[in-house]
Image 1 (cartoon, helix red, strand yellow):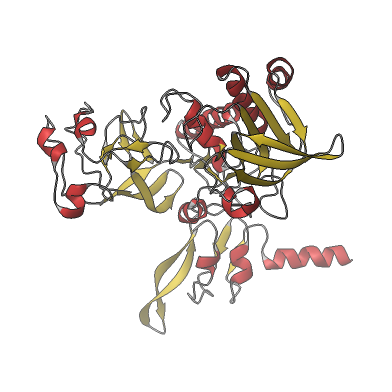
Image 2 (tube, rainbow, N blue to C red):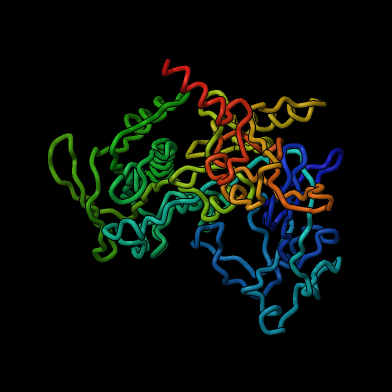
Amino acid sequence: MVAAAQHPNITLYTYSQVESVGGYIGNFEVTIRKRAKYVDYSKCTGCGICETKCPTKKVVSEFDCGMGERTAIYKPFAQAVPNKPVIDNKSCKKLIDGKCGVCAKLCPTGAINYEDQDELVTEKFGAIVVATGFDLIEWGKYYPEYGGGFIPDVIDGLQFERLVNASGPTGGKIKRPSDHEIPQTVVFIKCVGSRDVLKAKSYCSRACCMYTAKHAHQVLEKIKGSDVYIFYMDVRTPGKMYDEFYMRTREDDGAKYIRGQVSKIYQDGKKVIVRGEDTLIGRSVEVTADLVVVETAMVPRPDATQLAQIVGFSYDKDGWYTEAHPKLRPVETNTGGVFLAGCCQGPKDVPDTVSQASAAAVKVVAMFSKDQMATNPQIASVNEETCVGCLLCKPICPYKAIEAKEITERVHGQTITRTVASVNSGLCQGCGACTAECRSGSINLKGFTNLQLLAEVDAACL
């Protein structure tokens, strides 16, 4: 989703995606693809008649993680903003074969438009806040010994969240996906995909320890007399009242924590067998469970690196966005005017996400409150007299600060036009990548020219 704020009004682009980003701090030019919704939001009131009467009711719900169903015309989730539906063109009978059309006949405001098409719009913005969120690792691909995602009663933590939610597919009741029976023994497996250098991700996903304790507490609270087993590597609870909640889940609620990893999960009739180890007693253990929940690693969105390349800022080896400085500039990128918020930067829980989002908003407000801005004086500059216009420096620049520029000059009494490189001072961050690539030596960093560096070397050798 792309949200555009234009004072004093707010323009909200939902069901949209960023196609390209140009410009620089204070003057970004963003091209947005508004995908076809087949519903005219200027007419739609969100009454819900179309959803109720739609005959296509067996579409798998993405929001319910595949455990629930929705109609072909639907609201993405109950609290969607704006609270208006879209039509799924892959399941709507009218869009597929020209039949049905019930929603258009019943809509009291005539908001249904089957002829809707994608639309490209270009807007100007002063700043960009990136908040693309995260995905869960495809644990079935990395851990086939856990059933590979094919055992129906082995689910991930996000699916469990939908089970215990009152608006979920089971109305908040914890039921096995296979037969909808209430499980009496539930096993949670932490760090599935996290802190695993050999198979998956080396980093800690941070939030898993606490939401596993929350899930265990919910099971023991909702299902009286149930047993909960939690396989863990370590328990990390750095936060206000976090450790107290963990100890309450363990000591008061009765969750059984087993320090060790799980080696195999397999189906045995209606039961799921979990084999692992308990390193505290030095023995292998086997738990016969009704439901198994794997608490999986957070990973960046699939198109996260593509978006970073479009906007023009850096990311690390795992695909998380890189901040300008981990301690002094934690919500800024090296590209001026681009800020980070939430899990696009790395795994974090809700309090950290809210804090970072607030900080990013304040940074934008502070930037907009100034008539003039201080920029980095040590940026690249081009000697137009020696530049040959090869533009090999342009694709090298990570901040898209180099552009082609045409200059006119007199040579032997004739006026000629040639192309040279030009550095945008609002985008350049002085990294120096272009100076190393320039074959004619026409680009230098201000304050770090070749002659200055050689002079420093000569002085050091004296």
